[in-house]
Image (cartoon, rainbow, N blue to C red; front, side):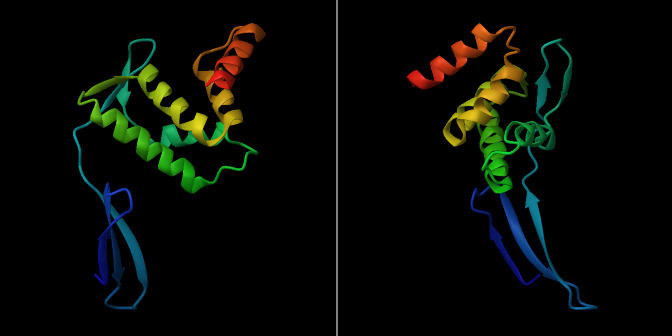
Amino acid sequence: MVDSRPTDDRLSIRRRRECPFCGFRFTTFERYEETPLLVVKKNGSRESFDRQKLLNGLVRSVEKRPVGMQELTEIVTRVESKVRRLGETEVTTQAIGEFVMDELKQVDKIAYIRFASVYREFADVEAFQKAIDSMEKK
């Protein structure tokens, strides 16, 4: 190992390593092992919290928007931190969705509306307009 330090978010350790045989250098990230977290879906089923699934949803919401992958990864980290700070072993998709929307509202309003339209399952144009109006008031 060449170097070891915490990442900026202090949630993992960044280690710079070097192969003793060929000299190739690479970086690994070690995350602290935490209590498993279950997500309770709308239909009552449960599944493990999946950072990648959350990131994929964010990527879809920011498609063709000026939001970089680094920022999306940071959003996922912040949302996961908020969820874990609740101190529960189970969290609803509604709670996760609200945390994500709070983050997106600060980053990109179009991405926020896109995410909200899927998350809140807008049934008509009026519901869509209501979400836009409430965002503009804040």
